[in-house]
Length: 183
Image (cartoon, rainbow, N blue to C red; front, side, top):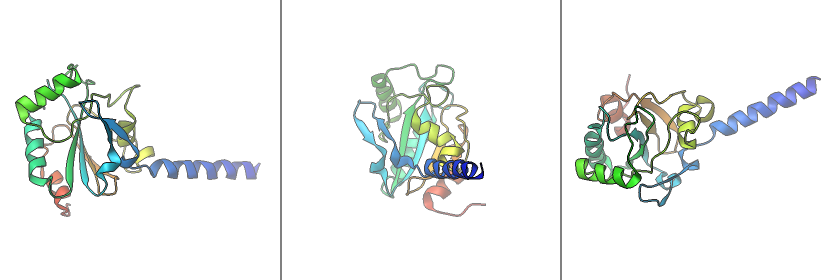
């Protein structure tokens, strides 16, 4: 009986370690244009992953996100936007409509992916990883609204997250991008 218990315990530890061993690079997405996007192409870059929406009180954050991207894109930094319609039906558009909205209203040039679900039974696998400590090894970080931001380091590991109301150019996010220590 002891052998079975230890065998089961060993398997649980191994499977848990394997799950926590996943990184951003283990996932794939699709762009707003329908092209495949392998997130492993971002190796060596800091990545800010943001769930977005076009009809939200936080939608003006697109302008700040674009400014942040323009400032740091040549310094191994990228923003990836994931439109989602999980909160108050604030992203009802098609991928083509979302692209047109982001380009026309905010001049978005950072990569935007196709619309996904960031919570619930149909949560996208990437967001399952981002929000589950058992998978990312760092934190449980349920997405609470549009424009929640996840910080990923150059090795594809989750470092932390910022609430939807926290501005993309907050001291926390800028310090992380610039590699400064924060208290």
